[in-house]
Length: 110
Length: 113
Image 1 (tube, rainbow over the protein chains, first blue to last red):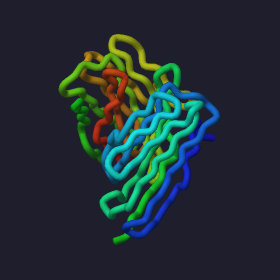
Image 2 (image 1 turned 30 degrees about the horizontal axis):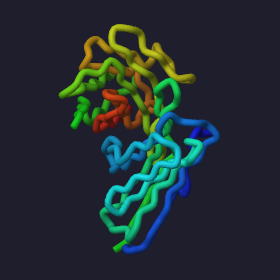
Image 3 (image 1 turned 90 degrees about the vertical axis):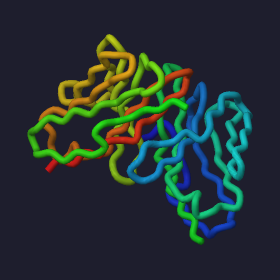
């Protein structure tokens, strides 16, 4: 079983729709990071959330860290085809390791 | 921003041969680097933590004699897949940590025939 449960695993939506990806765990993390990965490339960091209850916005992307620092969500408003990709959450454990969720493969159709 | 490179970007080898993958931090020094493996349509799985000047720490289930890690300098870590077999075919990604953030390399795709 994975330390971080990410859902949904696959998501296919139309351009302009909103979506939310969830990342849940029973463990507490010192920080939680969201990455986006294109095929054949390494993951690229989108955001790091550190404080429980923290909300960060990156243009149409909104990231939230749960109050207990065990879960997080990524919300995308008015999705565009350019948002297509694999979205990964990763929790940083107390010994500075990154544990990744299974990933959410998003497809936005024009 | 911090840049991490990997070489080669892809490699095809015969079963039984050894393959070395390099991970370099180009504009910063990293006392700690990490090696991950990613199978098709799956997430990244941590293989080992590479510490400059000391032995690597391997995750449970990862054979240290098969996946040799050398972190000889503050900007270079190497992963050698010894006696590679087809089941070792995967996407290998390294990361280097600075300022509390891990920066990832572009990955190396290994295909063992």
